[in-house]
Length: 97
Image (cartoon, rainbow, N blue to C red; front, top):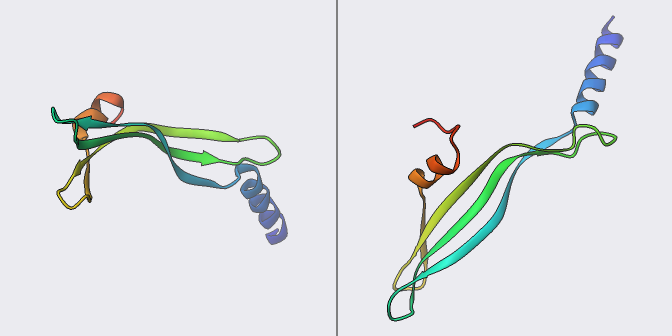
């Protein structure tokens, strides 16, 4: 009985494959001042869960959300980045308010 349960559990693990969180950068652009100096960097990316599947089954990504992050350029050339919650809400209607 234990051997049968072990084999069933192992088969389920193999069929489900491994999934991991992924983040793909989709676009980005600098916001420039009137003096043509960079002020802020806007980055959009897709965040979700992807699986490699097993024997060609179960492969792909699911639960993906588009995200927007704004990075302000500081005087010392470092970036301070924050997620834009309002834009993320607009891009993903399934995110609760």
